[in-house]
Length: 128
Image (cartoon, rainbow, N blue to C red):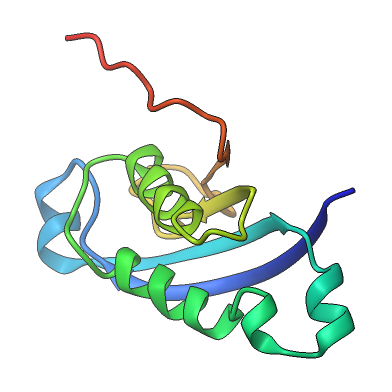
């Protein structure tokens, strides 16, 4: 059985994108996370030390969103997933990364990339 902690709507201004104006001007990015981890111990002890502190996770994700620029949402989502999986209790994480101000020349509601990573996932092989 897997329990989950969900955090939706983490927002920060970042300078990610393939276009110069995106890197120069920045824009808001929004992250939604679902962390999979056992929560029975935390429920029994009522101690935050036995779970993942979701406030700290949100701050970490916001710092990544506002951090070093990348070209692709896929890269940024993977950075977030990798960082969250460094927390020992987390067995898997799903990251949905939204770019609501993406430079798309037609009306649209949202652009999002969703990835799921587990502790068992091997790093992706990059072929040049």
